[in-house]
Length: 237
Image 1 (cartoon, rainbow, N blue to C red):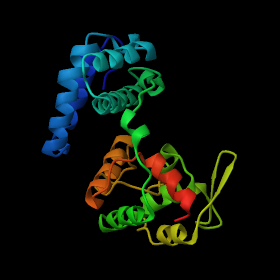
Image 2: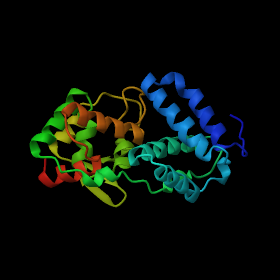
Image 3: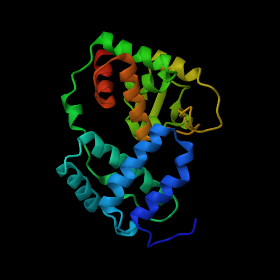
Image 4: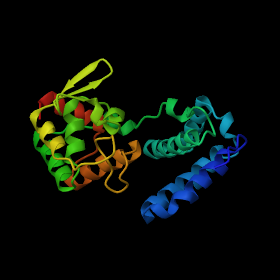
């Protein structure tokens, strides 16, 4: 694609949407369409990509909240905008994604009640039934941050699935994680965990919806994945 420094946010997000719309199911398409055409384009669509700053995007989120949009919906707007701007970076429309430095919180996460051991087991059973236990169990027991979990590569391992080195941290994996990783299907991808629908590493928003779906399948109340991770490491599942 030709590099267009003067492209607006509205033009870019609309192009991004129309190029990918045929790859999504109807629910995803309708959700993205609503976020883009009801919130992003009316809110900051006239701004040039190169004029976007973290402060300007944060002010946009604040206006959405002040106009009555729920914290979860604002967070979904943020995830989609960040994804669109990540693509703009890859295509060299902008050099840095300012949305990545915004502070967006889900207020309901702080009100979540820790799950009991039986509930955690129901969550793990649901993940296994959905065929995603390796990424979920590794995420809950290894101490990896979500961004580290989703970008984990086979090169990060030491002594075959027993340790993961991330920066100065050396994370020790338990026997079950090691066994789950050993039975993952072979792939030419350097990443360990791939979304079976796309064959690519999970995006953060995709992992969020995966976690949400597992909770729903298990009949459990909302709890942020990082809070569930802390709980699982605390009780030693």
